[in-house]
Image (tube, helix red, strand yellow):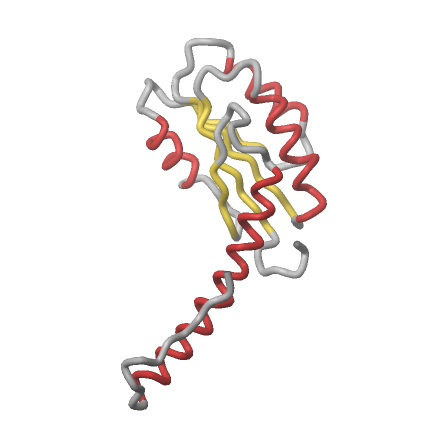
Length: 149
């Protein structure tokens, strides 16, 4: 992973009634993803949970004093999408991943996503170059560009 341009990863976690999972998730994110990135920033946004999620989020912040862990609490329940948007506005990384607070997707999947993003960015640059050529030259309508799967 260290060969791509995304060295600083931000991870946004919308938090809602996840007192049982949030601290474990933050620990696992740093443990599994740490070796693959220069830095990892975790941004937790509590969407006005009714349980002790806030206490667990603050514990997660305290458990990683040497790492960028941010915590925000919404003033009322605005919904997951608004919590995500709040978190996105607080990120500083080269790349941002959004992950649920309940381990629905394993943190290791983020590595695959970022690898594919790097690959997609490479192809996007190549396609942009080809589009420039197409605009300046005449190509037959049957010309096709195949991208690797």
